[in-house]
Image (cartoon, rainbow, N blue to C red; front, side, top):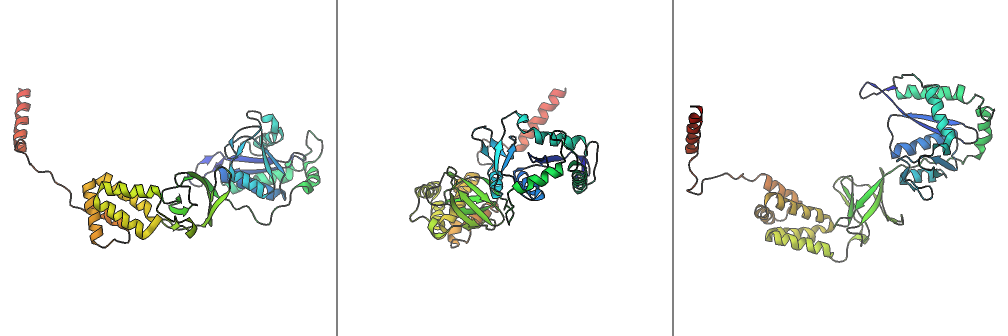
Length: 357
């Protein structure tokens, strides 16, 4: 139990345990929450504490490491798989519901829960980790293991030379996900847009990104399709080789739909595409959305105002602001069959008095 710095209350932590198969040397790490990136970072911390990496990692089928459990062909989490590959290790998931396949690490979890951490409360995660590290060094490593009847530290000294040397640089962690390629030939990552090679419009690709680059990958082969530098929100990254030589059929159909909604909408959309190319596709979709929200007639009038002003730098923003600031419509009595509201009021008062009598 560790005090949460945000809520001020004690809460349970998660315990990560990596156990070496020969010496039973353990690395135990505490964390408040788990995620794909946290799971990979914990392995990296464990390898650096050991001074080397293992060639294989036997694990259960938790979601942070295994996307699809299969004893013969498991689907590993891409970030976890790449992090292990950076350290020269491979993952071997166990059978589902068969913890005996990794009994050494399961025993290491129970050993920590029942010995140093049982009934303890700490004021911070750092204090808890320091306490656990001291116990690991002065007690767990110096004990005589009950199975092999030898000291854990002595056996680890024999096992350590078999570990794989650590790489010079740490693994560069990234985020990943699937994206659908829009009509502009781009995928969206954190409100910025990055192109893919021609021929991928409407299809789904895998995307990896970190603080520096965005990588677009073929979902079937894993081949790198494009690598872009990160852009600011709202910006586009489209190299010359990804710009279409002629207008795609899907774009032609979009422009025709705009012209069908309203003549001025179609004209404005055509001029936007002629001036800005692929980067205008999303704004043209925005014009059609405004027409659905405010009505085709009003949207057509707004586009006419945009054309009269000489095609603004951002026509979509111009049309949206024009529609939002227009004079609201008022209801008027336009048919003689509609009576004065006072007559309805008097009738309601009369019926109310009759019911009370």
